[in-house]
Image 1: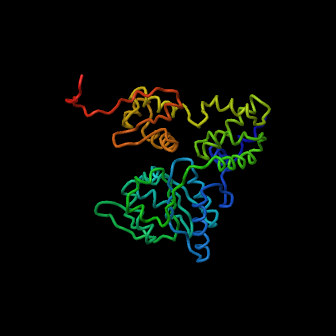
Image 2: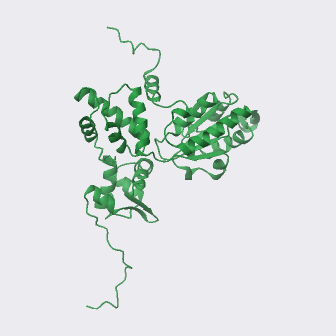
Length: 348
């Protein structure tokens, strides 16, 4: 028996990446939502083309899954340039960056995801590359150390981050364009799902894609993930056609409620109510209670809960809102604030 996929020249990881990227738009006209960002980027691209110059450096920031990586690839495609991808944690020393920069041609795009996690040494090494397109690279060490001034070809650095506040001021100021990506509306997510369903050759009944969109947390990545899970469920438990009943059953199995909250979101809110009396509570304490990393809660859970008004951030910590308690049918145990001293004027 011959299995064609096994003898393919691509590795399994490459095949999976190709499949995942296939749902991504390739050009700006194919992108849905983020109309303000698209218009600004489109003008910058057209102006750069008319001047026959590379684009200025761009920073995309916002919660995970909103399309920062996709936009970086779209910009490269629109400019007809090659794109080289890396991430902040992967660039641990100057030599790592030098390997990327030395292979870049004029107009190429260097994409760095999670750019806020670059080390201080790497940041300082990148500064002259972004401003003057040259770097001072030190070879050898000790008495034999010498610094080589290495000229670079003009390139475009595109950074993406979920935490723009953690970027140092010198690095942030070197980006010529800074764009914040917002959560998507339900109609925009429905349109994205319709495009994805066509690419996946899915048959969908009316209203099913909108139902998935309402539970996608305003995030295209979540919407496409849920669409694939619903597709699997429909293929195994049904006829392969997405119906309202199939979608409801699949999302129930995935523990996604009507507002898009998953089990981790609900556990976060329940911990605030049941363990910390509704808050305020520090994020480290909540993370320890749930057995999760702080970064996971701050990057994945909190942005959407803040967006829908289920969570408040205060100087003293996180607080749950009445809307969250009503949604989860929880009774808030939050105590009334007191000064901590007896009332001398209270009459018995």
